[in-house]
Image 1 (cartoon, rainbow, N blue to C red):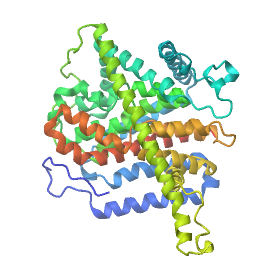
Image 2: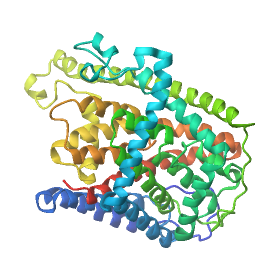
Image 3: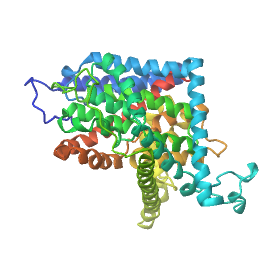
Image 4: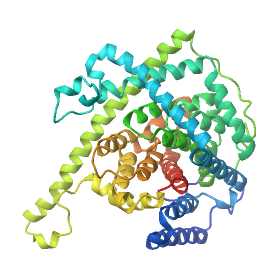
Length: 479
């Protein structure tokens, strides 16, 4: 990845990270990664996570546009906030209990949408196994499959309508401003970008920018990049409910969503430092947008319609991408038989696996990242596969894979399972680049060119942010 040069005029003609700095950073982080691997029995899983934090942070610094322009006050306070939030949740029993209780409330919340889905779909919406009273599953004694369309998609409609109602009454905006005010004062970032980043805790990557819609056309490239990275590193409130419904650890999902606020913001400022003066620097007193809805009923109806579009999009994307995965697996599995048919001896292909698949390729490619998160050696191939699936396809597919594997006796350790949830919770996948280009580009058509240039880089930093969250959690979570 080449360092990105912003289209905004650069004040210092000698700006740009010197190549010797990049080579030095690359050498240091590679040596740290190799040392952690060879000394893994000595440093333990938490030592792996410490190495991972340094490696992932260093990887973003390696490709920074200009390290000499970085506001290190923002970086230090952002990292401190991320650590404080992680320690409060994972090490302070009182806070952990509160977050666990919130996770329980979310599961109860899902039950409300289940009531509506069961009224419409009847037994088709009953996902319980026969042992605990399931009705639909009794028809399939040996090959029962989770009825995704009737169980997992309806909560998206309900949660979308609920958050739209909160937005109509101004409750969502007040929560967002409170969180943004804390980060603006500590990190000295602009109000517009910080409001949007804070909104990502509750809203999706194209909905959160609506909070600061009037400012998007006039944002600096650095602000726009922070807005995009945050969208990649977070999930929406509706998706949070869905992932927990898939079986993801509720505490991990909730914690990483909050940790991603300062993390995505400071990593964005590390990668693409600010070189202009933002319009809303140091303040969250931006103009308030009037609710576009006539009343609460109109808000609920509009939210339901938006949720329906999102649910249909999720279902359609899964059908298409899983089909492509199946096709890729068939092509990869057919390579060895073709080579044998061309006359190559079986001995020359002895190291070539008979069951080569996309999952195996992802496992090999992302196993080092899983290791640096603090995952046990026995689980790094599985977790690496899930990370690859999340990036190349989407997090839904990865979570559903994990849900399926959870039924296996040798699934993975509880620690690996929790850390995987930290890493998977985010919209950082290739399709999100197009989603942001379309969604944010509609708010500021004149910035489409900047959005297109920043898209791949925002994906890179957003994905690293989720890995960094997981590595920090790995330091705090016991084996």
